[in-house]
Image: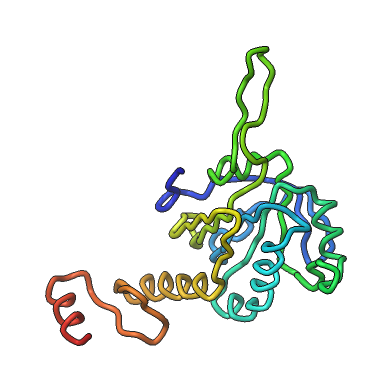
Length: 210
């Protein structure tokens, strides 16, 4: 698994569905450079079971992400048409109607491969034929990208393991606090808690107050 933290987020241009039903053919995260932080996350597939709980949970927290100047973008290996159909399907029928943030279509699987969350890879069999080994879907990868386009946090879960959206918000808060105040955020830090300077005295004082 590649560690992308500290590196530029891999570039892509791909089709996406935005605003709950509009097609964009050349969607890119570059539009957020210098303007917004980005939570870019992968999920395995449309019309599945765990995925809508995460996708809808992100939508439910969009006011909180907006307050923090964060764009949320989802991605799977499904086509733009599959995304669109799922977005038109009522929640009671297993759909995600009401989700407004962009869903990127990675049906070539190249975006998932570049972010190193693809749950398989191509190889050649004894006949020289290209075959896919593994599962042609993405793991549950999540990447926090700063306004300069650099990855500052990544998390990759196996497919059965749903993510905690509040934890994503906490990490955004920690990154923004650190950028603003030049301090570091200790274990379990949340907005409003004390942080500390990167000095031995600061660490000792912090630990002594616990």
